[in-house]
Structures are given as structure tokens and as C-alpha cells.
Amino acid sequence: MGTLCAIDTRPRSVNPNTLAAMKDLARGVERELFHRSMSGQARTIYEDERRARSLSETRFATVFQETPTGKAIVDLDGRFSVVNPKFCEVTGYSSDELLSKTFQEITHPDDIQQDLDLVAELIDGHRKIYSLEKRYLRKDGSPVWVNLSVAILRDALGAPLHLIAVILDITTRKHSEELILNHQHELEQRVAERTADLMRSKETLQAIADNVPMLIAQVDSELRYVFTNARYKEIFNVDPSSLPGKSIQAVLKPSVFEELLPYFNRALSGDRSTRDDIRYDEHDGRIWRATYIPDVRNGVVVGFFVMSQDVTEQKRKEKTLTDKALLDHLTGLPNRAALMENLTHAVDLAERGLADFSIFFLDLDGFKRVNDEHGHDLGDELLCQVSERLRRKVRQHDTVCRLGGDEFVLIASGAKEHDTCSRIAGEICTALAQPFHLRGHTVRIGTSIGVAVCPAYAVITPEQLLASADAAMYEAKRAGRDCYRFAVEVQLQVGHD
Image (cartoon, rainbow, N blue to C red; front, side):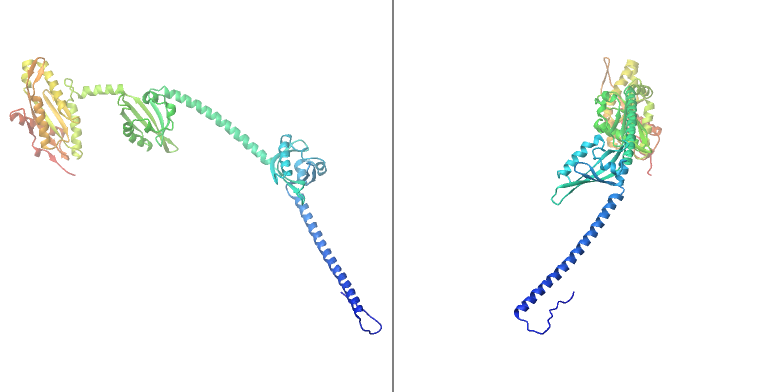
């Protein structure tokens, strides 16, 4: 840094005053050196700040001018102060043209008020930034959609200086959105038209279904109604319009639902089924036939259709024809044909070990005498009264048949014990031994009964069983009449699997 010297022409002693002067001089030199050092540091700091400011300005200029989004600095009155090339490209104006305008002048009239309201909130400090989608009017008058983001720059005291705007051209996106909206609107129109067509078709279907003389319904896989016709009002006293979504179980009587549930399940498993003896109401004499048809969509059963028709008259005619074929015209009891049909079914069950039963072969004692003494008319009336007494003596699930003439056969299901069969035969003998009153005449008859027991797993034909009971009946006649005898059991072959 250099040397400060005090030089004289001769040696001398330094007195206090001289020494003080030297110290003052040294302090002056120190101050000069200090000021020189501080001046150098200040120049260094200034140069660093200058370079940093230049770099920041360069960076800002690069970001502002070169980025692919429009940028602008706008004063508080809305006038553009600085704009970048991208913003000029978006609006179609040159930089000089934009700097002579406000953002209000190039904003679409429908979008100005919202933009002004947001700028006011920004200046008042209610917002720090805002964004919106708006339209600028290009120089050629065409609109351009942009996404505008605006922030405010304030000084150290918080006073607003100017606005900084970032503009992104979204015209292509808006055009795509418009195409999508138009397509969606077109689809909605088509759906509306198709829905109207379907409604008209549904109304037509409903009108047809309502006028068909049968119950028609569509049911889903959860056993809930999807569609019903007007006859549900007549049969179940419910409003058909209230049924969609409601469970079948809520409409049918519990006993009817339990009877039909297996048919519902069969339909849901893909099998078509029919039941023709349905009574929806025990107080209603009508009989219905219902067909359950699986509703298959794309190979999956989604429910089933119900077609239920009143077959009361048909059943009546069938019963009439059946009665003529299987009922005795005089007594109304099942005839020989019905006996053999019932007996064949009972023997089949017994052979498979599913049931056992006994048959009672009755032949009236003294009937020929009544017929000869009082005529065939009273004989026929006697047969009718005998039939009525037999009906009252047997159980509901037993069957009494008139074989012909004065011969009757009783099929008693479940009766296999000798004690039980003896009691039944004894009660029949007692009942028929009571006097009969026929048009002023009182007559007495008796009956001889042959009993044949058919246990489970018995291997025998209906004819053999009937012949066995017939033989036992003749044993009773030979024993004095008005009694019963059992068939010889060893005549029945009994086998086991």
C-alpha cells in the first residue's frame, strides 16, 4: 500500500508535541486507506448488482417475449404497457397497435363486465389473482377464446402499480367442446325421439295387453313386477301402475305364493313351465292356467313372463267328460275304470316302498230280495243311500268305488294293520246294517267284506289284489254273511331292493 516517512536533515529528539503531530498524520493516512477500501467494495457491489439486474432483465425479457403464451403488462386503467409477440399473434394486432388500446376495447362485449369486476376486486385487495375464460375480438373482428390469468404488482408500501396478464389461446379446445356439445345435443335429441317412440310403442303394447282376456306380467330376477296389464285390477284389486318394482309376494296370497314359487324358480333357471289348477282367491270359483316363460337377454335369464288364463269353463267341461268316463251315473261314485286307475297308482307306490294301503271288497247281503220285492227303482235308491253312508264313513283321502251291481270297493291309504282294517270293516258292517227308509218302505240289508292288505314293497298286480279281496269276500259270505274276512297274506309276494 506504500510507506509514509518523516525525514529531516539531522537527527533530533521527538518531543511530545511532535509525536502527537505524527499520530494525527498517521490517523489521516488510516482514514484515507479506509475510504479507499470502502470505495472499492462499493464499486464491487454495484457491479455485482448491475450484472444481476442485467441477467434478471434478460431472463424476464426472454420469458416474456419467447414463451408460447401471450403476456401483457397493463396499467390500472386497462391500457397495455408491454405486450409480447404471442399476444400480438393471438389478437391479430401489432405491438404498436395494442399499446394504443385498452383491454376493454378488444374484449367481446358480453365478457367485459365480468373482467372489469374481477380487476376491481384485484385492485381493492380482495383477490391476489384471477382466471377466467373470455373472448377477445381480433383485428379482423373474429372472436378468439382465451384463458386469462391476471395478477397485480404492488410497490413496497402495497400500492398497486400495474397488472400482469397471461393469455392462453383455447379456441381449438372451445371448438372441440362445441362439437362435443352439439354431438351430445344431437344424441339427446335422438334419445328423446327414441324414448318417445318407445313410449308410443309401450302405450300400444299396454293397450293391447290391457284388452287381452288374461293376466300378463313381466317379472325380474328378484321376483319384482316390471310390467302388468289391467286385469290385475280386476283379479287382485290393485292399481297396475303401482306394481312395477313391487314384489310378487306382496300381491299373491301367502299360500298361493308358496304353491307357485317352484314354478317361478324353474322359469328363472331357464325352463318353461305351466300350472293349470291355480286359484288366486279361495272365495273366487275361477280356475287359472299360468305359463311361466324365461326372459333371456344375451344368454342370461333376467326374469320371466307370466301368461295366466281363466280356464274355469274348460275345467268344468273336462270334469264333466271325466265324470262321465270315470263316475257311476247312478251313485256318483267312481266307477270300475276309475277304481282300476286309482288302484294301479296305489300299487305302483307300494311297489316302490312309498306307501301302503288296504282294499275292502263289499257285496251287499239281501239286495236282490229288496230289488225283487220293491222293484228296481227302490233298488237304485237303496244303492244311492248305501253310497252316501259309505262316503260318510271313509276318510277324505280314501276312495269308494262302485264296481257294478251291488259291489263296492274301498281303497284305504295307510291302513295296513289288521286292527285298523278290522275297525274299518266293522264300522262299515254296522253302518250298512242300520234300516234304510225308501219311499215309505223300511228295509234292512247287510254286507260281506273281503279285506286285502297291500304293504310297502309288495309285488302284485291290481287285478291280483282285487281278486284276492274278492275271494276273501266270498269267505265272509260262507261264514254267515254280514261280516268280513282277510285275504290270505301268503298270496302276496313281498320283495325288497
